[in-house]
Length: 247
Image: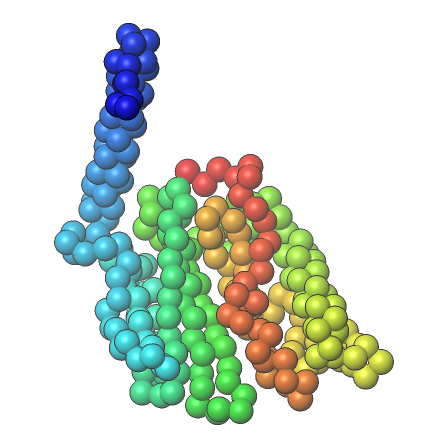
């Protein structure tokens, strides 16, 4: 027996037309926004045919990949930043090291982080970070103090957030039986991680509107906890972006 299909009534037709119209408007607005953003970036680019940040060197090695970023902005200060990136990374190019980078654009702020894992000593690899936060309107670096002011926090607030994270790491490691509190307490843990001051050697970065800190520390020890410290463990959330305007 054949099923009978009723024709769409007028109300349903109107609803479909309205929905399609709204969808079309949203698509047009999105296209306009993307084009407008790209045009703004083109005005500050050295090479208008390349991305705002691109890889000037790529070595796609499975074990020791190397990706060196170049910031494609017309600015004397950004030229110095690119030189700094070269100076930092060149010592690791011909070594058993991995070099990667990420970047985020939040409002008028471009943030770049370079991550280096130095594997020259296979028993105690070391990790390094370098970040740059750039005001795209002024085409210049943003000082750490200005970032703290933007997020309405102090260095003491940063230190406390980092401390809280390390405490949570230690408690989790004890729970997973890497450490025994009677053998190595929290101060002992910090000693093995090479941490004397929470705010030493920290690197600020804005990710998805959040202020985070990259902090290197010793991740190999006699407690064999290196497998616990994946790369994300070196990223410390300092402030969420709920009420921050970085336009």
